[in-house]
Image 1 (cartoon, rainbow, N blue to C red):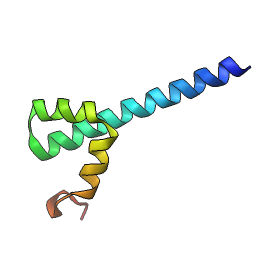
Image 2: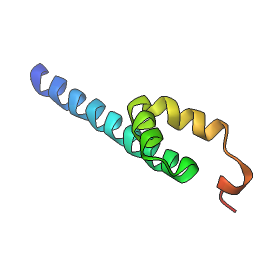
Image 3: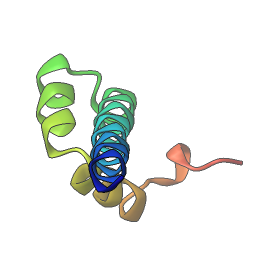
Image 4: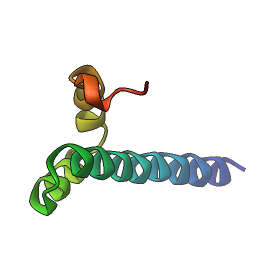
Length: 63
């Protein structure tokens, strides 16, 4: 039973990493319109998402 829980846990963590990369790429593209920056920020994943959330400009906020 333990190997099944470990596999579920691994898949959930892997899915969270992928989700972070996707969000980072979208945020980067919205701000910079640069493929190179989007790739770099996708690699940084959740670190860039947190940075983006803390440094949003007025025009990037929901009205």
